[in-house]
Image 1: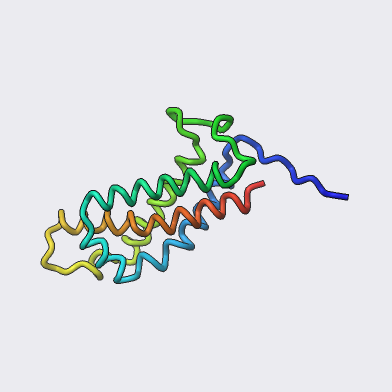
Image 2: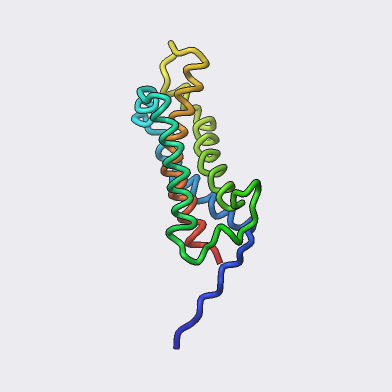
Length: 148
């Protein structure tokens, strides 16, 4: 006798965001406080940082909708035509890295003092784009594994 797994409800719940939050913070933490990420970010061109953001979006969408055949973006709640679950995933992926970077004072720790505040902001944004790659994997995995 096989037990049937209950169907995942199409609506997005607060519990789904909480699961994403845990996964996003869990995987983002080690990369925010790694000097190599900040050195990499300081040497990246803006085009590379934008491409990294694109990779985060692609990983997030693929993890939510391509890797999980039970989930359908067409039946989920949308904001401006974008599934609410995906919006939440992106906010949490980039937001968790940003919060941790600022909480741990990573920009002041890893960026040389000779930089202007504009340069510090640009390097920080690049580092956030790198850290978000790992955060989105954790957030999407937690959402998929723990969703009912």
